[in-house]
Image (cartoon, rainbow, N blue to C red):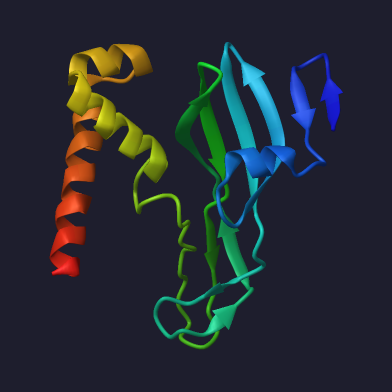
Length: 160
C-alpha cells in the first residue's frame, strides 16, 4: 500500500480493504479522504457481461461513465464509492446493454445495504433524525424508506 501525503490518497495494492468492503465483483483501486469523507475508487473484476437481450457474452466496451454512490459509513465517516458504469456493445443483437451491479439497484445512488440500514434506523427513530445524522434531505430519506418497502413487497409477492 502506498500513501501520498500531499493529497491524502492511498493507492491500494492489497486485498485487505477489498475484504473489509465485502462487495462482490469489485476491487478497490484508490482511497481518498476529503473533508472527513472517504472516497473509494472501484474497479469491476469481470472483463465483459452477458447481454440482457440475447444472452450472448460480450467484452466489447462501448462506454464507461463512473457514478458516485453512498455506502455504509466507516469509523463514523461517510463513504462514497466511485463505480464504473460500463455499457457494452453486443455484436449478436447489436444493442448496448449496461452492466448490472449486484449491490446497487437500478437508478439508485446508494448501495442496497446502505438503504437497508437507513430503513431499519428510520423504523427505530424518524426520518428527520436520520436525515440530520446522515446529512440527507427529508425527501431523500423518505425515498430510500419507500424504496425498501417496495422491494420487500415485491419479494413477498415473488415468494408466494
